[in-house]
Length: 217
Length: 138
Image (cartoon, rainbow over all chains, first blue to last red; front, top):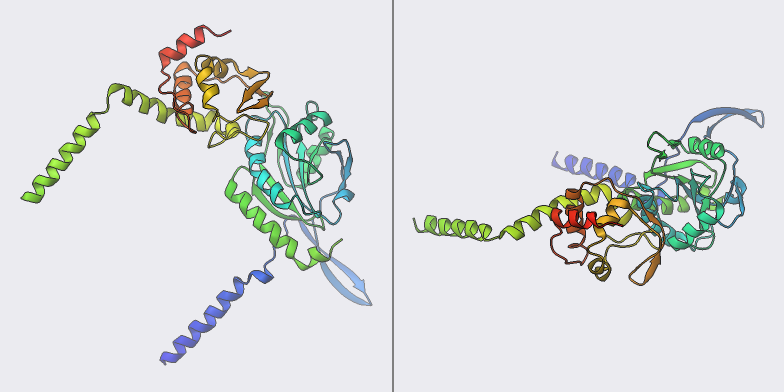
C-alpha cells in the first residue's frame, strides 16, 4: 500500500517534468485565427490560419524604403514612439538598448520603431536620433511613414496610438510586439518594464530555436 | 529586573540619538525624501532611476562639477526649460528639456534630491534659495 503512494508520486513528478521541458518550449500565437478547409489529394484537410501583419511601406533613418519583404526570413520587434516624446519613449528605448546589443550581430533579427509624429520626425531627425542613441547598421530601423499608414499598422499589431489631444500630446501604448518569420504575433511586452523586456529577450531566443522558424527563409 | 533596565537604557539612548539630528539635518531629510517622489513623477522617465540619462540623447545627472558650477541657475532650468548646447561629463548635448510645472517648493525638493544623489553632495537647496534664484532668471 505504501509503495502505491510512491509510484503515484513518481508518475506525477514525471508529468511535472514534461511541462518544464525547455527543449520543446514554443511561444503562443496571438491574434485572430480562422479554420480553413482545403481539399488535398481528394481529402478534406482543415488548417488554422493565423492573423499576420499586412503589407506596408515605410522609410528608415537611412532613407531606404522598408516593406514587409525587407523582413522576409527575419524575426522582429516593433514599437511606436516619437523623438520628442517626454514620457514613456525614453524609458522604452532605454529598455530596448540591451535587446539591440544582444542581437545586433544576428542577421535574422530586426527592431522596428515607428514614429507616430511624421511631421517632426523626418528622415534626418530619425538619423540624428539613431546616432545619439549609439545605434548603427541595419538591426534597428526607425521608420517614417504617413500618419494613416502608421496608425493602420499599429492596429494590426494590436497597439493603440492616438493623435494630439488637448494637451498637444500624442498618446500611444508602450508595448513591444514580437513578430515571427511568418509575420504572426508571438508576444507583447510592456516596454516600460525592464522585467518584461528581459522576458522578451528570453522569448526571442525560444522563438529563434523553434523548428519552423529555423526552417523559414 | 536587570534586563528591563538595560532595555530601558537602550531605548533612552535611541531617543536621544534621534533628537540629536539638528534642524538642518531634519530639513535636509524632509526635502530629500519629498524630492525623490517629485523626481520619480517628473524626471525619471528621461533621466533614469539612477540619473544615468540616455546615451547621447539625454544627459546624465552625475556631473557633480556641472551641478556645483550651475547651482544657482538649476532652479531656472527646471522652471523655464533648457534649450541649446550643454556639455556634461565632456559630452555635448543639444536636445530640449521642457519647462516643468513645478512649484518653488517642489523645485527645492527635487534639486535637493538630485544634487545629493547619484554621487553628488551639494547639501540642501531650500525654498528661499530657489525663490532668490528664480527672481534672477534670464
